[in-house]
Length: 155
Image (cartoon, rainbow, N blue to C red; front, side, top):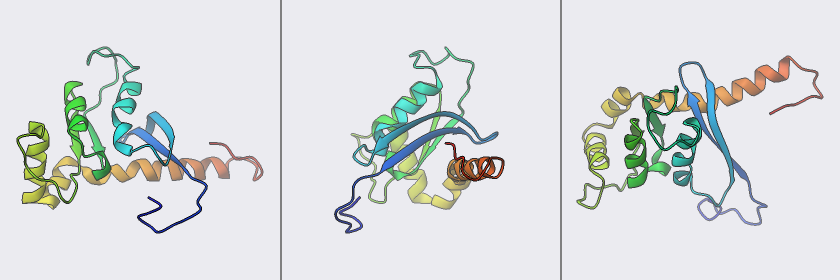
């Protein structure tokens, strides 16, 4: 990231990865990593945390309909693993994605759908709801701050 934005001498930063119920804004699972960990590596871990790390798809009362994720999560394994758990992966493909026999079939289908009509795919998959996770964290922080003394900050 530093090279992309031509930033030098940074001390590093932390990233928060969140699995959120978009209907009630409940945080189901989260992880904190440094800037060296790729976002794509966290999807499986978050799904496992929501399911309590059980391997079987039906071993939990929690029901996940779909996973919404940006292009940083566009890997064959991130399409395969949620589907194995009975979850629809709704992952935006990278700009240079192609249909290939080496790709997982579901990923190839998503590549085709997004290339044909990205706006239609976004609407059908409810991709815009992905932003709820970021606004929910900001709103939660704000609401907590106005209900506590100014010198007391939680997270």
